[in-house]
Length: 599
Image (cartoon, rainbow, N blue to C red; front, side, top):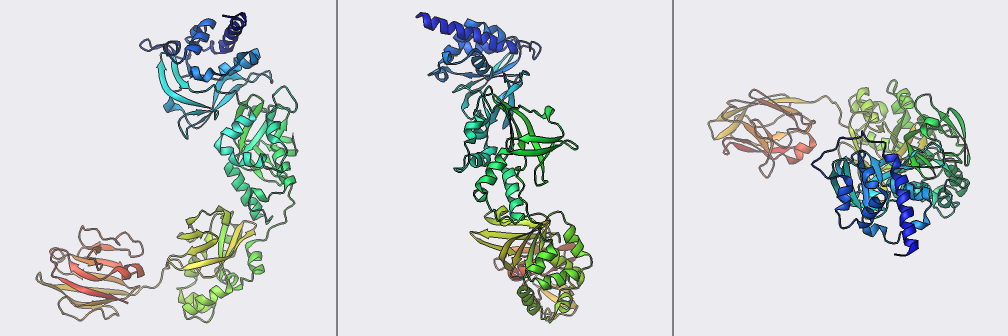
């Protein structure tokens, strides 16, 4: 063995003793379980950990590891290939080793996506804050985006050992920014071709200017929320690529404090000088950032410690002062777009206009005047008053208008390809379908309206102009008909009486054909229903509605509102049910059957 190799090994041994000394104070962290080996015995008995075993034996760290409860991420022999320990300072090597050890027993079932503290510490603040470790579970257990657990849960009597395939690097700002999936859009922003070398800046070691740093890091959702704000503000910005170079550079710089490791406990109320300007910190109700546009930004995760600074995750992007013009309210936007009949309709419902203006967040699908003209023609109405009467009065008009309003902000960029379902102010569900660049809205009757002008920003949301009036389910005056149904033994049904204004069937004719009208609510009183329960079927003879315990496919339809009480069954013939309905039958005697015509 050469003299230089002996000196190198001795140096490593001394550094390892120093590195693990901070762990040795945890003597009471757990009670040993004698039936299991120690963490050192697990490592020393492994043929793939000869390097680690040698280092632990030379330095006495076998005893240190046994003096408390630890989780050790143990690199195998292959992980040490190409590693030149002589290139590390004493402090760097110590921290690298401690970066593989966390206090306590963390078996794989207890690990989750996110950050945990290692026994490594930062050395620049004088307070020795513990360095964080990023755990991601997308494809096994990955540490800091660089080292994978290959053999988990080697249980010791004082903790657990997880074998890893690479040395876990001591992270800097860039490590977590690039390894954590929640920062993908942030990385896209700071690496855009027209931006300064932010990656090089954030890689600066803590002992060099302008490090250390405090980074308020917006996650992916934060960028989506901010883009929605920029669209709503009428800036013309639809995506990250639309942000001007200077605006993006200034925005990124507003997230960064240079020369300070400001942890959550050190945040103070008032103005804070950032790398690119000034922001305000508000601590009156939890820690919040007030950006130059007056937007409140919440701090979601704090104190993710790195070797050259600390990160805090925030839920919006800090923006420079954009001098955004004041947005119109809903009425002003409708007037500007010439939606006069819509405004007249809203005005016909007492208090609706105020309700819409006072909503915190709304998306309005606003029909054009031509759309209302088509609705007037469809209901054989000459004006708005006649249309209101035709649909059942002002209460139903309020339902119709509420069906056009979603109590949330949904710009076109917020919609996913395919179906998007929204609960409306009317309490009914609306479907918005996105197919490439085409956006359509589908009402409760299956009618389709096209979005002809999207993303008209208003002060409390957005307006999408559509070419049809959407119709929800309405509470209309329903025609009610009762059918008294007798039977000829087990061979036939016959209608003995009809109560109501419909010529449903010839009376007293065995297995007669019935003619039922869409929109009517029918009650069928079946004499001798016990031995002769009635069912309504489709052309394939599948049950749609059944009087006994059999389950018909329309029995749960709220619009059909199927009810069975004693010998009677009651239902509303909806268009959907009418499309399927073909015949009636006695569930017990198939010869008792007849055809049904719907109109």
